[in-house]
Length: 238
Length: 177
Image (spheres, rainbow over the protein chains, first blue to last red):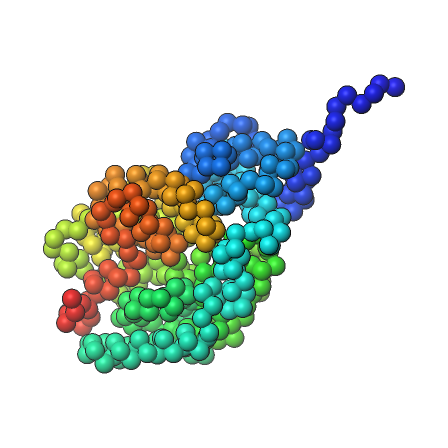
């Protein structure tokens, strides 16, 4: 019997196997190494990495590099590489999976915090009562100061409204006057719409931390609220 | 972000009765239907506009159709002759570099290096205004404009749509400014 010449341990590619199991459609083995992904990626070169190199490291079982590189946070998971790839390999999706493999306490703090806050209700963490109050206060000011908009409305929890509108938490938290133009547009178009006093933030940062349970939870809560209001359309503003 | 909800509903098979739509498609639809009346006469100085295609809305969301709607609305609001498009564009546009949690994750140097491509692309249009119909794009484009010394104004679409509104035959901006 020959002695073992190749140490297969180094190329076990445990991370690759995990991803193939979780995302069969990621097409990891189809890579032609053509480099279209890397040449069109704004994150190429950051952290001495690019999408092509990242995929080679993964395929060749360089698990330590894959799990340790901060390139997973330089990549914005924008999927332009997938759009360019002749084999439709989804590096963004792979990055998402690897972000999820980082223990929570080792993830970028503010990113995890945005998701944790969103799980409680919204990504800036302002209380629901404050959101309701700010909307009412800003509305009152417009109605008083701009006579042509004296009938402007900003309904909250209006059952049976045709359209549900979500609201990025940034406005009610730091620049509430930025909510007004959209209210005016909806008013001018004669739209029957409503906000919700719960789960009103549409930002959804839990997509970026890599935990599917968190992401699912926040989307499920939003969907329940919109259905409970009985709205036919859910408008996302971005 | 559009994709976060769209894909979340899809991937986790979350039951729902509503239809998930973008405000950008609705602006375009309402203008086409005459439900929303706008004109570009306010732009007598000929302010030039360009646009950022949010990845989450366009490439990962509703595709080129919504990106074309976005351009349709900007042209109606600012004047057809005052829109200068970027290249690459639509689903093939570059991410601004603020997405994917990059604005929260804290790797500021990486984020700005990433954004240099976006800065160069936007600066090449020579536009006075960059429309960013996504909060992440808005924050990132503001930051790279400031950091690399750009001259444009970075705004949401609704600010200009409000300016261009015609209500009962008169401009919605009457009595303002």
